[in-house]
Image (cartoon, rainbow, N blue to C red; front, side, top):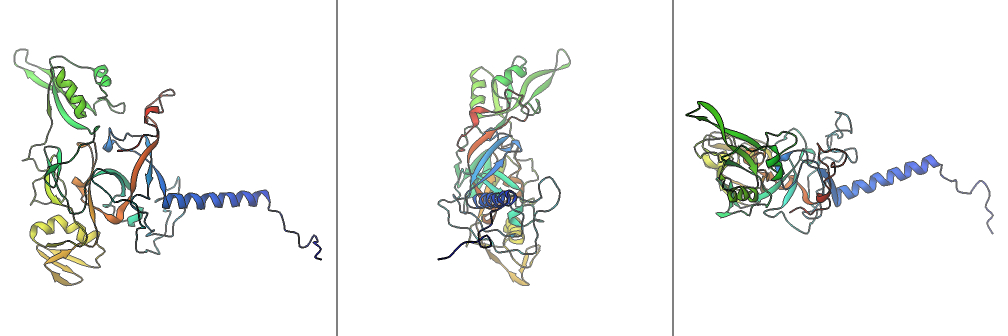
Amino acid sequence: MEVKTAENKPKRKSAFREWLDSIAFAVVAATLIRWLFLEAYTIPTPSMENSLLVGDFLFVSKLHYGTRTPQTPLQIPLTHQKIWGTNIDSYLSWIKLPMYRLPGFSHVKNGDVVVFNYPDSLGLPADLRPNYIKRCIGIPGDVIEVRGTQAYVNGKPAENPERMLQPYLVYTKEELDTKFFLKYDVWNRRNESENWSPIAELDSVRKEMVTVGYRVVTSAKVAAQFREMGMKVVQDIMPKDMPENVYPNSQLFAWNRDNYGPLRVPKEGETVPLTALNIALYRDVIENYEYNDKVEIEGTTVKINGTPVTSYTFKQDYYFMMGDNRSNSADSRYWGFVPADHIVGKAVFIWMSLDPEGGLLDKIRWRRLFNLID
């Protein structure tokens, strides 16, 4: 029969060692949950208003589309680009792995609100580029067009989000004030002129400028209410003959944010002839997101790894994203397609919402807590 002595009795962990073990377990568990299941994000800009507001805190599901394996594995856990509170990189680029996606139970669909890595940040690894959130307007193979602010997908009008914001010209016979616009939620505490501003014209009799209406950014529902009051309401749309610096930034296309396309979204396995128009449309894709070793494009001549090519087959799927605040959103109209390997996950619900300008009693937007995102 074995007799235990003081020498073989197991040593009890110190309180400090138990504390360290608990911290290590919590970090590992949080890292796995963040990678495989859910990750928290916040809304910093108004590009998705009024569907998502500045100060909304979201949970984003990695399970819907399938989580990605890390391209940059040498990284401090629970960080993105920088070590908390510093400007020091939280990762080392010594090792770069191919990126794969685990099976998900869904695919990106038209109308989904999606978090993705901003593709235009080419100096960073793909999985560490800034996180953006937009609504998916076009999936692989779709033809996207915007006609007078209305998006069309394959020739049919896309369903507009209920709270989508658009600019309107509202003509009135009397001056309106902040109190009026606040009543109809056409007001922004951060900048009162951001969502409405007066329209003035020269009075031919009094020889002075008088207010005849307002430029207003609001929803179609509120615009309809203004019409019911007898106001003249028209959409504030950029003319077709006013080219803007939008993707693909080519003189071959006189497009702007309100009159855009038609543009076909690249699809994996699809082959396009490399005409002058297609080179302008898809040059950015071929050069930056297809993992080609060497691409040379001069005029209408394209060489890949030194070999001239007259057609190109896409290696992955792409998506076209737009913000719900259509006149105040830097989206695919300005910087192009989102590659499939940049998709992070689907925004599913708001777990907290804080008004950046709210006071002690109205800081939390209670009505938005635990709202599903549609």
